[in-house]
Image 1 (cartoon, helix red, strand yellow):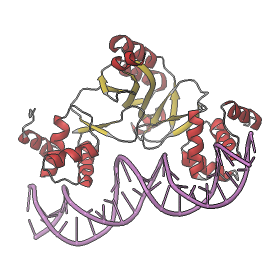
Image 2: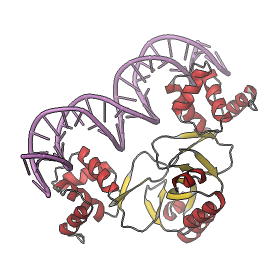
Image 3: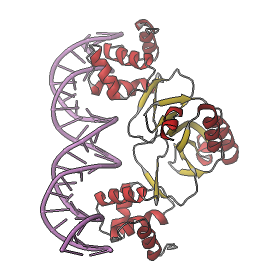
Image 4: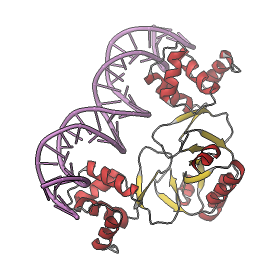
Length: 147
Length: 147
DNA sequence: ATGTGTGCAAACGGTTTGCACACGG
DNA sequence: CCGTGTGCAAACCGTTTGCACACAT
Protein backbone atom coordinates (compact mmCIF):
# COMPACT_ATOMS: atom_id res chain seq x y z
CA UNK A 1 0.00 0.00 0.00
CA UNK A 2 2.05 2.89 1.22
CA UNK A 3 5.29 2.07 -0.47
CA UNK A 4 5.73 5.76 -1.02
CA UNK A 5 6.53 7.43 2.27
CA UNK A 6 5.44 11.05 2.41
CA UNK A 7 9.07 12.02 2.73
CA UNK A 8 10.01 10.30 -0.51
CA UNK A 9 7.36 12.11 -2.48
CA UNK A 10 8.25 15.29 -0.68
CA UNK A 11 11.84 14.94 -1.72
CA UNK A 12 10.83 14.34 -5.32
CA UNK A 13 8.85 17.54 -5.30
CA UNK A 14 11.72 19.48 -3.79
CA UNK A 15 14.19 18.05 -6.27
CA UNK A 16 11.91 19.18 -9.05
CA UNK A 17 12.13 22.67 -7.62
CA UNK A 18 8.53 22.72 -6.46
CA UNK A 19 7.20 24.09 -3.23
CA UNK A 20 5.74 21.45 -1.00
CA UNK A 21 2.14 21.88 0.10
CA UNK A 22 -0.25 19.40 1.62
CA UNK A 23 -2.37 19.56 -1.54
CA UNK A 24 0.52 18.77 -3.84
CA UNK A 25 1.70 15.96 -1.65
CA UNK A 26 -1.73 14.42 -1.55
CA UNK A 27 -2.37 14.65 -5.29
CA UNK A 28 1.06 13.23 -6.06
CA UNK A 29 0.55 10.47 -3.52
CA UNK A 30 -2.81 9.48 -4.97
CA UNK A 31 -1.49 9.29 -8.51
CA UNK A 32 1.66 7.48 -7.44
CA UNK A 33 -0.12 4.83 -5.43
CA UNK A 34 -2.97 4.17 -7.80
CA UNK A 35 -2.97 1.41 -10.35
CA UNK A 36 -5.94 2.99 -12.07
CA UNK A 37 -5.98 5.71 -14.67
CA UNK A 38 -7.33 8.63 -12.74
CA UNK A 39 -8.98 11.68 -14.17
CA UNK A 40 -8.74 15.03 -12.43
CA UNK A 41 -12.25 14.48 -11.11
CA UNK A 42 -11.34 11.03 -9.82
CA UNK A 43 -8.38 12.50 -7.99
CA UNK A 44 -10.48 15.26 -6.53
CA UNK A 45 -12.99 12.74 -5.20
CA UNK A 46 -10.19 10.68 -3.65
CA UNK A 47 -8.72 13.78 -2.05
CA UNK A 48 -12.01 14.56 -0.35
CA UNK A 49 -12.51 10.96 0.73
CA UNK A 50 -9.12 11.14 2.41
CA UNK A 51 -10.08 14.32 4.21
CA UNK A 52 -7.87 16.45 2.01
CA UNK A 53 -8.80 19.98 1.13
CA UNK A 54 -7.57 20.45 -2.42
CA UNK A 55 -10.15 22.09 -4.64
CA UNK A 56 -10.73 20.85 -8.15
CA UNK A 57 -8.90 23.90 -9.49
CA UNK A 58 -5.91 23.06 -7.35
CA UNK A 59 -5.98 19.47 -8.53
CA UNK A 60 -5.74 20.74 -12.11
CA UNK A 61 -3.01 23.22 -11.26
CA UNK A 62 -1.07 20.58 -9.39
CA UNK A 63 -1.36 18.07 -12.22
CA UNK A 64 -0.09 20.69 -14.62
CA UNK A 65 2.90 21.42 -12.43
CA UNK A 66 3.65 17.74 -11.80
CA UNK A 67 3.43 17.04 -15.50
CA UNK A 68 5.81 19.85 -16.36
CA UNK A 69 8.19 18.50 -13.75
CA UNK A 70 8.00 15.11 -15.41
CA UNK A 71 6.53 13.43 -12.35
CA UNK A 72 3.21 12.37 -13.79
CA UNK A 73 2.09 11.73 -17.37
CA UNK A 74 -1.30 12.17 -19.00
CA UNK A 75 -2.88 9.49 -21.16
CA UNK A 76 -5.94 9.24 -23.31
CA UNK A 77 -8.00 6.09 -23.21
CA UNK A 78 -10.03 4.42 -25.90
CA UNK A 79 -11.98 6.40 -28.38
CA UNK A 80 -13.13 8.68 -25.61
CA UNK A 81 -10.45 11.30 -25.82
CA UNK A 82 -12.35 13.89 -23.90
CA UNK A 83 -10.59 13.50 -20.59
CA UNK A 84 -7.02 13.11 -19.57
CA UNK A 85 -6.03 10.33 -17.21
CA UNK A 86 -2.90 10.42 -15.12
CA UNK A 87 -0.23 7.94 -14.17
CA UNK A 88 3.13 8.31 -12.48
CA UNK A 89 5.69 8.86 -15.21
CA UNK A 90 7.99 6.38 -13.53
CA UNK A 91 6.04 3.61 -15.24
CA UNK A 92 7.75 2.15 -18.31
CA UNK A 93 6.30 3.01 -21.71
CA UNK A 94 3.07 1.18 -22.28
CA UNK A 95 -0.22 1.58 -24.10
CA UNK A 96 -3.86 1.07 -23.31
CA UNK A 97 -6.64 -1.12 -24.55
CA UNK A 98 -10.19 -0.32 -23.49
CA UNK A 99 -12.99 -2.86 -23.59
CA UNK A 100 -16.14 -1.42 -25.11
CA UNK A 101 -18.38 -3.65 -23.12
CA UNK A 102 -17.03 -3.75 -19.57
CA UNK A 103 -15.07 -0.53 -19.80
CA UNK A 104 -11.98 -2.10 -18.27
CA UNK A 105 -8.63 -0.64 -19.26
CA UNK A 106 -5.76 -3.04 -19.94
CA UNK A 107 -2.15 -2.05 -20.30
CA UNK A 108 0.31 -3.68 -22.64
CA UNK A 109 3.82 -3.15 -23.84
CA UNK A 110 5.11 -3.50 -27.35
CA UNK A 111 8.26 -2.78 -29.25
CA UNK A 112 6.35 -2.28 -32.47
CA UNK A 113 5.79 1.41 -31.83
CA UNK A 114 9.51 1.98 -31.52
CA UNK A 115 10.02 -0.03 -34.68
CA UNK A 116 7.53 2.23 -36.39
CA UNK A 117 9.30 5.33 -35.11
CA UNK A 118 12.62 4.07 -36.39
CA UNK A 119 11.16 3.35 -39.77
CA UNK A 120 9.50 6.75 -40.03
CA UNK A 121 12.69 8.47 -39.02
CA UNK A 122 14.50 6.70 -41.83
CA UNK A 123 11.78 6.97 -44.44
CA UNK A 124 10.46 10.45 -43.75
CA UNK A 125 13.23 12.14 -41.83
CA UNK A 126 10.96 12.98 -38.93
CA UNK A 127 12.08 13.32 -35.34
CA UNK A 128 9.59 11.29 -33.37
CA UNK A 129 8.50 12.34 -29.92
CA UNK A 130 5.60 11.14 -27.86
CA UNK A 131 3.38 8.47 -29.40
CA UNK A 132 -0.23 8.22 -28.40
CA UNK A 133 -1.87 4.94 -29.16
CA UNK A 134 -5.17 3.74 -27.80
CA UNK A 135 -6.82 0.53 -28.84
CA UNK A 136 -10.33 -0.57 -28.20
CA UNK A 137 -12.45 -3.61 -28.72
CA UNK A 138 -13.63 -6.52 -26.61
CA UNK A 139 -11.58 -8.12 -23.87
CA UNK A 140 -11.39 -11.91 -23.78
CA UNK A 141 -14.14 -12.24 -21.18
CA UNK A 142 -16.58 -9.99 -22.97
CA UNK A 143 -15.75 -11.55 -26.31
CA UNK A 144 -17.05 -14.92 -25.20
CA UNK A 145 -20.14 -13.44 -23.59
CA UNK A 146 -20.96 -11.67 -26.81
CA UNK A 147 -20.50 -14.69 -29.05
CA UNK B 1 -11.76 19.67 -57.59
CA UNK B 2 -15.38 18.65 -57.87
CA UNK B 3 -14.89 15.00 -58.47
CA UNK B 4 -17.93 14.40 -56.32
CA UNK B 5 -21.02 15.43 -58.22
CA UNK B 6 -23.80 16.55 -55.94
CA UNK B 7 -25.87 13.65 -57.17
CA UNK B 8 -23.26 11.12 -56.10
CA UNK B 9 -23.15 12.46 -52.56
CA UNK B 10 -26.91 12.69 -52.57
CA UNK B 11 -27.18 9.06 -53.51
CA UNK B 12 -24.77 8.07 -50.77
CA UNK B 13 -26.89 9.86 -48.23
CA UNK B 14 -30.07 8.22 -49.54
CA UNK B 15 -28.46 4.78 -49.52
CA UNK B 16 -27.51 5.35 -45.92
CA UNK B 17 -31.18 5.98 -45.19
CA UNK B 18 -30.68 9.66 -44.51
CA UNK B 19 -32.89 12.50 -45.57
CA UNK B 20 -31.25 14.83 -48.00
CA UNK B 21 -31.05 18.49 -47.06
CA UNK B 22 -28.94 21.25 -48.49
CA UNK B 23 -27.04 21.46 -45.20
CA UNK B 24 -26.18 17.77 -45.14
CA UNK B 25 -25.12 17.82 -48.76
CA UNK B 26 -22.86 20.77 -48.19
CA UNK B 27 -21.20 19.42 -45.07
CA UNK B 28 -20.66 16.04 -46.71
CA UNK B 29 -19.29 17.71 -49.84
CA UNK B 30 -16.85 19.84 -47.88
CA UNK B 31 -15.47 16.88 -45.95
CA UNK B 32 -15.35 14.70 -49.05
CA UNK B 33 -13.48 17.18 -51.17
CA UNK B 34 -11.03 18.40 -48.58
CA UNK B 35 -7.54 17.05 -48.20
CA UNK B 36 -7.26 18.74 -44.82
CA UNK B 37 -8.39 17.51 -41.44
CA UNK B 38 -11.33 19.71 -40.73
CA UNK B 39 -12.79 20.46 -37.35
CA UNK B 40 -16.47 21.21 -36.94
CA UNK B 41 -15.58 24.88 -36.72
CA UNK B 42 -13.51 24.70 -39.89
CA UNK B 43 -16.42 23.13 -41.69
CA UNK B 44 -18.80 25.74 -40.39
CA UNK B 45 -16.53 28.52 -41.65
CA UNK B 46 -16.31 26.88 -45.07
CA UNK B 47 -20.06 26.50 -45.21
CA UNK B 48 -20.55 30.20 -44.65
CA UNK B 49 -17.84 31.10 -47.15
CA UNK B 50 -19.73 29.08 -49.71
CA UNK B 51 -22.96 30.89 -48.92
CA UNK B 52 -24.39 27.92 -47.11
CA UNK B 53 -26.73 28.35 -44.20
CA UNK B 54 -25.90 25.49 -41.86
CA UNK B 55 -25.53 26.61 -38.27
CA UNK B 56 -22.74 25.26 -36.12
CA UNK B 57 -25.25 23.08 -34.29
CA UNK B 58 -26.37 21.59 -37.56
CA UNK B 59 -22.77 20.95 -38.59
CA UNK B 60 -22.32 18.96 -35.39
CA UNK B 61 -25.59 17.11 -35.84
CA UNK B 62 -24.75 16.34 -39.44
CA UNK B 63 -21.29 15.09 -38.59
CA UNK B 64 -22.80 12.82 -35.99
CA UNK B 65 -25.26 11.40 -38.47
CA UNK B 66 -22.65 10.99 -41.20
CA UNK B 67 -20.34 9.27 -38.78
CA UNK B 68 -23.04 6.86 -37.65
CA UNK B 69 -23.76 6.11 -41.29
CA UNK B 70 -20.08 5.35 -41.81
CA UNK B 71 -19.61 8.13 -44.34
CA UNK B 72 -17.09 10.22 -42.42
CA UNK B 73 -14.63 9.33 -39.68
CA UNK B 74 -13.27 11.40 -36.81
CA UNK B 75 -9.57 11.58 -36.01
CA UNK B 76 -7.49 13.07 -33.27
CA UNK B 77 -4.29 14.83 -34.13
CA UNK B 78 -1.09 15.15 -32.16
CA UNK B 79 -1.11 15.60 -28.47
CA UNK B 80 -3.94 18.07 -28.77
CA UNK B 81 -6.82 15.69 -28.39
CA UNK B 82 -9.34 18.31 -27.60
CA UNK B 83 -10.99 18.54 -30.98
CA UNK B 84 -12.15 16.01 -33.47
CA UNK B 85 -11.13 16.34 -37.10
CA UNK B 86 -13.06 14.72 -39.91
CA UNK B 87 -12.16 12.87 -43.06
CA UNK B 88 -14.22 10.87 -45.52
CA UNK B 89 -14.22 7.28 -44.32
CA UNK B 90 -13.54 6.13 -47.85
CA UNK B 91 -9.86 6.88 -47.28
CA UNK B 92 -7.73 3.81 -46.58
CA UNK B 93 -6.53 3.30 -43.02
CA UNK B 94 -3.79 5.74 -42.18
CA UNK B 95 -2.36 7.59 -39.22
CA UNK B 96 -1.21 11.11 -38.48
CA UNK B 97 2.03 12.76 -37.55
CA UNK B 98 1.91 16.38 -36.38
CA UNK B 99 4.94 18.66 -36.44
CA UNK B 100 5.31 20.59 -33.20
CA UNK B 101 6.94 23.49 -34.87
CA UNK B 102 5.08 24.17 -38.11
CA UNK B 103 1.87 22.46 -37.09
CA UNK B 104 1.65 20.59 -40.36
CA UNK B 105 -0.15 17.24 -40.30
CA UNK B 106 1.35 14.39 -42.31
CA UNK B 107 -0.39 11.14 -43.08
CA UNK B 108 1.30 7.79 -43.29
CA UNK B 109 0.36 4.18 -43.67
CA UNK B 110 1.85 1.24 -41.86
CA UNK B 111 1.15 -2.41 -41.49
CA UNK B 112 2.68 -2.46 -38.02
CA UNK B 113 -0.57 -1.59 -36.32
CA UNK B 114 -2.25 -4.56 -37.87
CA UNK B 115 0.70 -6.70 -36.85
CA UNK B 116 0.22 -5.42 -33.31
CA UNK B 117 -3.49 -6.20 -33.40
CA UNK B 118 -2.81 -9.71 -34.58
CA UNK B 119 -0.31 -10.26 -31.84
CA UNK B 120 -2.62 -8.91 -29.15
CA UNK B 121 -5.45 -11.05 -30.40
CA UNK B 122 -3.26 -14.12 -30.05
CA UNK B 123 -1.56 -13.17 -26.80
CA UNK B 124 -4.45 -11.60 -24.91
CA UNK B 125 -7.53 -12.91 -26.65
CA UNK B 126 -8.85 -9.43 -27.37
CA UNK B 127 -11.00 -8.49 -30.30
CA UNK B 128 -9.40 -5.37 -31.70
CA UNK B 129 -11.47 -2.62 -33.21
CA UNK B 130 -10.49 0.90 -34.03
CA UNK B 131 -6.91 1.91 -33.32
CA UNK B 132 -6.09 5.51 -32.59
CA UNK B 133 -2.48 6.43 -33.05
CA UNK B 134 -1.10 9.95 -33.25
CA UNK B 135 2.55 10.73 -33.49
CA UNK B 136 4.24 14.03 -33.01
CA UNK B 137 7.70 15.50 -33.32
CA UNK B 138 9.56 17.52 -35.89
CA UNK B 139 9.12 17.18 -39.62
CA UNK B 140 12.25 16.96 -41.76
CA UNK B 141 12.19 20.65 -42.67
CA UNK B 142 11.76 21.87 -39.12
CA UNK B 143 14.31 19.38 -37.84
CA UNK B 144 17.09 20.98 -39.88
CA UNK B 145 16.01 24.49 -38.97
CA UNK B 146 16.17 23.58 -35.31
CA UNK B 147 19.58 21.95 -35.44
C1' DA C 1 8.69 39.45 4.20
C1' DT C 2 8.11 38.02 -0.35
C1' DG C 3 6.51 35.39 -3.71
C1' DT C 4 4.01 31.51 -4.77
C1' DG C 5 -0.14 28.38 -3.84
C1' DT C 6 -4.95 28.24 -2.86
C1' DG C 7 -10.28 28.52 -2.89
C1' DC C 8 -13.94 30.34 -5.06
C1' DA C 9 -16.60 31.54 -8.83
C1' DA C 10 -16.67 32.97 -13.22
C1' DA C 11 -14.94 32.18 -17.94
C1' DC C 12 -13.56 29.22 -21.43
C1' DG C 13 -13.75 26.06 -25.82
C1' DG C 14 -15.73 22.28 -27.96
C1' DT C 15 -19.96 19.95 -28.11
C1' DT C 16 -24.92 18.84 -27.12
C1' DT C 17 -29.75 19.84 -26.43
C1' DG C 18 -34.79 21.96 -25.80
C1' DC C 19 -37.75 24.37 -28.20
C1' DA C 20 -40.56 26.28 -31.92
C1' DC C 21 -40.48 26.53 -36.72
C1' DA C 22 -39.28 24.81 -41.62
C1' DC C 23 -39.05 21.40 -44.81
C1' DG C 24 -38.32 16.59 -46.93
C1' DG C 25 -40.81 12.28 -47.83
C1' DC D 1 -49.57 15.83 -43.76
C1' DC D 2 -46.33 13.70 -40.62
C1' DG D 3 -41.95 13.15 -38.96
C1' DT D 4 -37.57 14.64 -39.06
C1' DG D 5 -34.09 18.57 -39.70
C1' DT D 6 -32.99 23.21 -38.48
C1' DG D 7 -31.71 27.78 -36.05
C1' DC D 8 -31.21 29.84 -31.93
C1' DA D 9 -29.85 30.19 -27.36
C1' DA D 10 -28.97 27.97 -23.36
C1' DA D 11 -26.83 24.03 -21.15
C1' DC D 12 -23.01 20.98 -20.74
C1' DC D 13 -18.43 19.10 -19.39
C1' DG D 14 -13.64 19.22 -18.76
C1' DT D 15 -10.45 22.64 -17.98
C1' DT D 16 -8.44 27.36 -17.09
C1' DT D 17 -8.15 31.81 -14.92
C1' DG D 18 -8.80 36.43 -12.05
C1' DC D 19 -8.95 37.72 -7.72
C1' DA D 20 -8.18 38.18 -2.77
C1' DC D 21 -6.29 35.62 0.84
C1' DA D 22 -3.10 31.97 3.01
C1' DC D 23 1.08 29.83 3.44
C1' DA D 24 5.99 27.95 2.24
C1' DT D 25 10.43 29.52 2.12
